[in-house]
Length: 475
Image (cartoon, rainbow, N blue to C red; front, side, top):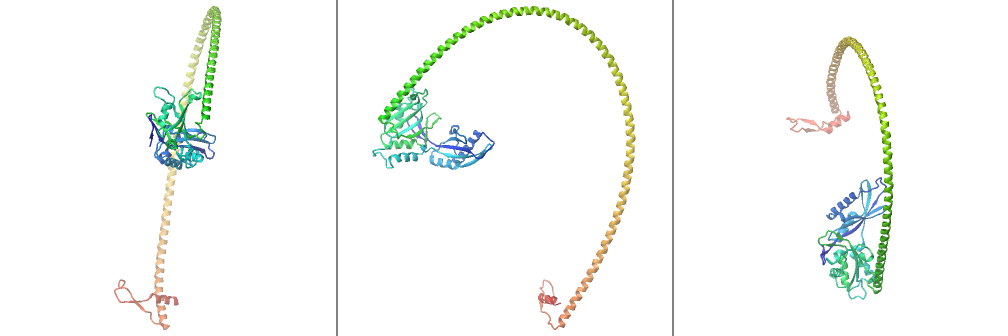
């Protein structure tokens, strides 16, 4: 959830990650489509966090020989959870874009983590630092803040100490505040500024760092989000020596800027003087060129008039020669036309004789084709008659063969039935002889078992299966 500040400012929680894309293996594709790469990152973030990325939430910040780095901003109130989700969804993932295989690595700035910042100052001042400690961190640095957001309305476009003090005193009482605009360093632009804020107590410093870390700043009525850089100062920025040094550096920078402006003004004046001299020289040169051009024009007009007189005489002579030549060509044309007409009549007679000869040849060829067609029909009728006779002979032969096969098959069936009947009569006699031999050896008759009623209606008895097997094996 956004934290509200004075003067219509708000702090938006966000995740700032650096996506490093490296090529895997060699590929014929030299250029990677950045639009496809952006769409891939948007789809992964959409699936993992259910968040849509804007156009300025994913920007390319660094290009190297083997890798390209993109800066990703995800606006979410659960910063740590969103960071873990993005790292888990993007870190180490291999994919293919436009025929090139890439691997995505995720890095993040420790300055965006409040725990990392706290650990850094606790390393210097100890973990038990508090408001009652004799030495504690008290100064934080914000770089890249929009100057106009901290300016007094309708007064100036540069950041105001009063407005800035009002905004950041929400977290605790301030001891010192210093704003460095870009114009203070000699630059003509003053769009951004850097702010050093010193709190009287450790709690104010702690609250400010905790509130500002991992967030971006936005002003009411504006869609722009300022991604400032947050640091804590360990260089004694507000010590008297550093203050004197900065004052000297500022005066030196302003002196250098004034000297540069003066040198630039002198350079501009010298350039204007040279330009004026060049303009006058150019005007004199153009006047001389105009005089010479006018003299050349008059001479050219005289030359053209003489050429026109000469050309008129030559044209009259040429017309006379052309009339004589036209008369000769007309006579030649009439002779050629008469010769062409005579030749045309000869060609017509020759064409009539050729057409008559071709007609006679076509009639002879038609008569020959008619005779050949009749001979072909006779040969075809004779061939069909011979084929029909041959087919009838084959059919009669096939019927005779079928009759012979049928007679043989009937004879084989009768012989098989006869053999079967003789085999059944011989088997019954052999069984009777085995039974008589079994009784003659002094064996008792085998025990009889009753057949089930379902198989026979009488109380007949049959030998058991075991005795039958003994009789068969003994014989």
